[in-house]
Length: 472
Ligand code: ARG
Image (cartoon, rainbow, N blue to C red; front, side, top):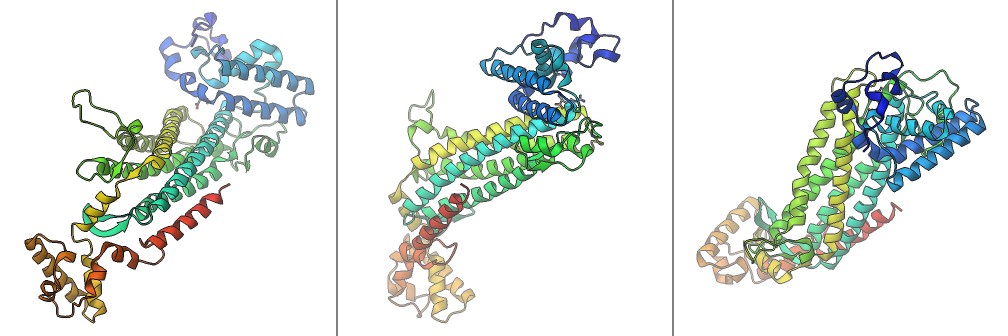
């Protein structure tokens, strides 16, 4: 960052807007109000927007063909300079927009000063953010799809693997590991839908709204929208330059995505502990302890879980930023970028971590099965069995409760009790009870859409894959 535009410290006219000013900006105020340190991330989108604006101006006759070509060539050279890291960013020029515009005039001379005809930084910045965010949405969507693909493949491989299902983190009923993974996938499918819904509202062109009221030049807003790949121009000029609801929606998407990833992370952390020992997370996703040689810590899921906090914070930051702003543009909105950028970066990084990690998860099937066999997870199956013998569910619940209590005293699982022992609690219990007390019988019996039966898991995988395919 070079801060050395020598004349602007003393000469207000060195600013692009300095004409009406009689003293130079206070040095601290200059830094305080500048955004170039962070909004230079949108430099290429800024140039893309300027190219479309200049082309449209030449098509409607506001710029000559020659002027347009000079501007376009100059902007393309600047883009190259930015990409190689040679662009001389200046805090005195405040933001990405004025840095690039000043550089254009420096390079091509007076014609550069015509680029800003019929627009304002207010519609320019709104355009840049939308273009930038659209690009991120597409990257995030692709990464979400990669994660879901890996998840569905793993779910299919683990369709028959039995594990305990939990409520209140207590063993509840046996489920299949594939079914559990498809629950994660269902959350992510809704996240993808939310992302695509948000994209529709991001993908509108505010260009032409100018400062707030539109412009007196004969601009063609539909043309710039088309050139930039937007679906349509935005409707109202005041709203176009001021609202950042599309960025808030994106952060709401990101907060829910991270909420879902943090839930999955929490389970991975639990399952890799020696107390559960359900899965193996390869060493490349873990780190060790500098003091306890035996440790292998699940850092990647822990960090994803932790990053949920900052994304939730960004959502609240943007909601609070927008609240109570009068129409139209206010400088407050400069504060929209850092939270938005960080929310997008965090979402993308966390998805990448998960998409890399999920295909590498190894289920420890024996441990899962052994855990499911403990904790009376087929107690509901015994109650359902009694109902099929004609007993009311509430009475069946009571009978099974007594059987469980007895089994606890005997230090046995239900399936390990003898027929005689079970019959103490109900004479309706017969030899066939042992079929329903097995874990395999229990999961296979839940054989309907959305149920945990291995066959249902396999057809759910097929449906999930078809849904992912439709995206291409
Ligand atoms: N840096 C500003 C922002 O991020 C650009 C728009 C400035 N517009 C203005 N009228 N000061 O919002």
